[in-house]
Length: 91
Image (cartoon, rainbow, N blue to C red):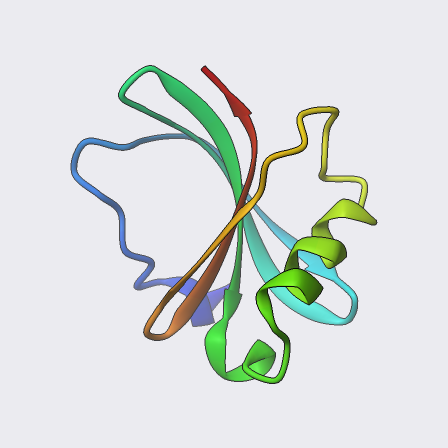
């Protein structure tokens, strides 16, 4: 997806996989990553498209998807152009 070409990546984070996905009608990127011994997934959406959704609504969207695994903790991080929903944390 050309709209996601400028995704920010922390220099200490290793992207293990990345795929274009659609969730609830929104185009998104699904990443699996590792940082400081932690492995997790991020669903990345365009902030402008989901600005009307609060953090709980975004987490619920992931919970009801087939992307979410058995590990329950989720975080939301809004970084300018992108909104990251992080989940499936393994420590």
